[in-house]
Image (cartoon, rainbow, N blue to C red; front, side):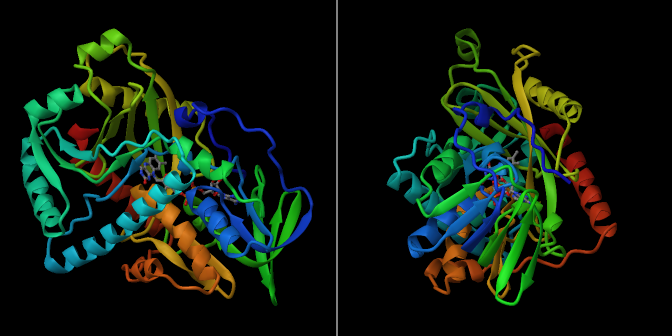
Length: 434
Ligand SMILES: Cc1cc2nc3c(=O)[nH]c(=O)nc-3n(C[C@H](O)[C@H](O)[C@H](O)COP(=O)(O)OP(=O)(O)OC[C@H]3O[C@@H](n4cnc5c(N)ncnc54)[C@H](O)[C@@H]3O)c2cc1C
């Protein structure tokens, strides 16, 4: 099935269109092939080019590079996540392993941004985990205990502070972590494309159809051409399963988000001119909502099992209505027609929220499954899988490989039934927060 993304994503539409797009239309040979040009694939390409300056590296994407989930996300570079249920001591150890990886992810993005002087609206303003229900204080106090044990700076705030800071009195309680960063995801991934080294050849709008391994070479077939390579890295994240990669360990989830137009001066004044902020939900299916630097409001409040290859305009419109309701709940004073665009994106999940990072077969590697932490962890995993594939080792690889392995998933139709009922249950639990 052909991968066709909508053209509605505000983050992408903020950028200038690219020129010089090359499509794969002949039969090529190379030392290295990367499938997927998001944060993971682009970081892998950059690292391989540094490690092997005289080798030919090809990176291919089914659509325009970076225009998958890497441009379509909410732009939180996270230091911590909630909703993983870490409470006992053993679970704290597991949570620490997770946050150690987030920390390395933040460093990897920071290094890239600094080295290439990238303007991606970087803001170290932290992030809130917020709820409209006072009773969620128990969840946040438990979380606070975990964060204190691990030395994360954070504070709990109540309605009065939150109303002033966020410009809405919807939230009754929130935990703010200092270490999170907000950024423009489209600008970040565009910089990764623009700075690709010279020995990296990027081909776009070229979807991988199938592949096979014959003795020492691996053959990849695209609609109008093929690539024969010595080593390959799969970096297709939400599309790993559909390419037959680790099918019993990951599954795609489709998310949709909407962005408003910039608030007018009057509208902005009405809510107290708040500075940029980002809120994540306390309950997993609640809304992620963010005020951007240029006064737009982004909301994401859906997650579903859906054909990952395409979401039609009418299907997006239905999700947009849910997002309008989410904005109205928090900002009843704004127009009904304030949403400017609604788009979808695909991520990959594992059963225990752990990531995939491994050698699949001789000379074939894969990295993916970051849930809501792919900006940092994808950037990190891309670099590190390139190092691993080059038979080298780093402290980072040791930390990554010390994580819990993804757990085995039941086959279809049990998998979809299980995921759908879990999402349904979580939606009911988070009803007030959507
Ligand atoms: C709405 C939304 C909100 C999110 N919010 C956040 C957030 O705030 N913070 C955060 O850290 N993460 C967030 N995420 C997750 C994050 O975007 C992903 O984890 C990250 O983009 C993964 O990067 P990637 O390079 O591995 O995958 P992708 O960016 O998905 O790149 C994979 C690429 O593979 C290509 N591909 C797929 N199949 C083929 C094929 N057959 N042939 C060739 N190419 C193929 C795709 O076209 C795509 O460009 C969010 C995601 C969404 C959708």
